Image (cartoon, rainbow, N blue to C red; front, side, top):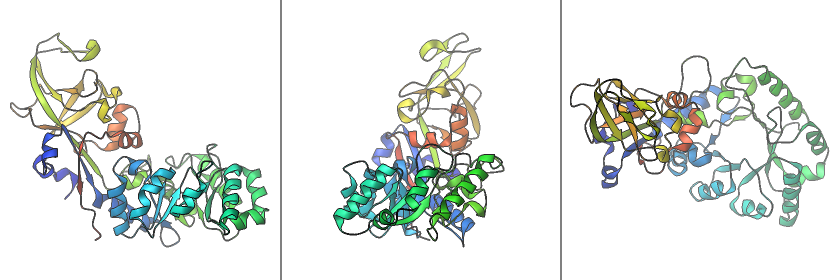
Length: 383
């Protein structure tokens, strides 16, 4: 079942759903389909891991990783140690990589849970080397080199020094050299080629070591950026990977919010906090049960919109903590009524559209989705 075919009756399956002010539908089959699409795009030279950090971009790391594991994914990437520890019991034979690496004193937790750290600095490398010596065996790791992001990773000099330090390399047992692209969503940006060249130069110091450069957008730059394996994150969840052409990925989420009240309003009356909107004519307003506590950004005030059926309705006034208001004046009589839902994402607007209306990006939209939504998962079984 696709997201645009979902009805309120399809979603309301439990008492908790009936009590909820808004319903978030997450299509696990679409996530799996996106992973397979990306995997096919980079094969046969490369393969795709799955980035499931930040609770799988806000969509639930447990159900998302379960669906991807059932589909054959065996490499998962998260940001923090706690994220890795949460996933390990359900992914017993999968590789789990921790992008932030180990903070001081946490190295033994990595070893005990068989989690692979990404080593981002000489300090982390030194501590991981000491942990390997204490363990009496080499401990696998990923080496992160900075090729132009200036965020995490070894610089050129640090990379050269490490490449000559055979004793350290034996202890930390690198299994992958990685870097991260800064401007991959803009295919024509000159930094993409500069970073590729820098990454290739770094790889020359570690002959035979597999490499990983491309995340979601980098996959669409072409095979030169694919290296040995890619790390899609946002693309798995249906976000637009490039600024050129249509989005090739399947939509994953749908958000429908319930109307609490419909009221008449006279010309000149104000709406919401701060009276930032005044009615220019007599009309009708629908107040909906969701707000910035649910991840609906305040920047949507007087610029966001939703859809009731096929009708686009503007969001008027400020977004408050639990409520937003839509102008439903021009809708057919009776269409806007208490209990009916206004769709914000997945009907007439994508996650990226929603982000654009809020003055942000789809990544932030997904990771901001609140916990008060009733979450309904579709699919998730291997096909």
